[in-house]
Amino acid sequence: MSFINLADQFGRGREKECREWIGQNDNMANSLATRFTRGDQFETLLGEEFTDQCRDKLKVIVKDNVSKERKLKAYMNAVKSLKDNYSPPTSQQENDGDGDDIKPQVEEEDFQQKLEENYSKELEKIENNSIMVTQEQRYLKLLEKLGENDDQDDELVVVNPASSDNINRIKCHLTLAVMEDPVRSRTCKHSFSKAAIVHHLRVSKICPVAGCINRNMRTSELEDDPDTAILVRRYKKREELQKKNKAQSALDMDDDDDE
Ligand SMILES: [Zn+2]
Image (cartoon, rainbow, N blue to C red):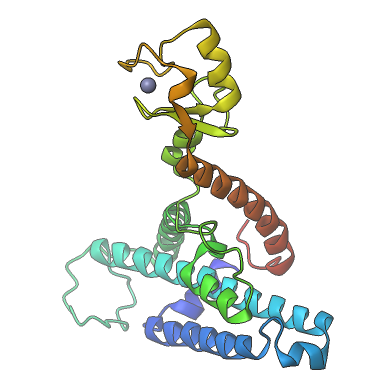
């Protein structure tokens, strides 16, 4: 979708209208979802293939809603930051009623360009700080309605996939890769890939984490580390979803990119 389209769609005080539209789409998708719940009588009646297609369409709608909402937010942020600094030469749109034109005036073309630049920046900021669309609450809610949330438990929790914190927490100090079979020391609570730490303890008793005071580590003090195991599982699942998602959204939204 081009920026101009977005401006038409979101601009001129239509934020409320847009939000209502997004909300209505959401409600519609959700109420339809209950009709296409997996294992429901409709599935038996209409066939799995058809209901699968319907479910997929509903997912596209809700994913699209999430991305529209992010774009709307970016647009409103961009407008706001421009409003604070400039006022457009055509002053017929004084929605906020601040009236006075003491701000520097810019030509309409420049204004448009500045707005567009700001919008790109804001959108990037929002996307960078957002969780994956498929982890958004409203998407999960839809999955629940569709009866597809079976393995939702801890896999799809709200975690920022870009956060390096998470990656570092699941990286093994010895292998420097994502932990396999994580175990932790009961003494110092440091975790490692099981094979790697067992191998390490054959040659040294010093905890491999720099600065750790545990200098007498034994194999017997190692225990399974389910917390890290969950993080690893989530991480892998996210990677998988991200890949799937990328392929999917390339299909879904071929005209929805500014690139
Ligand atoms: Zn340690």
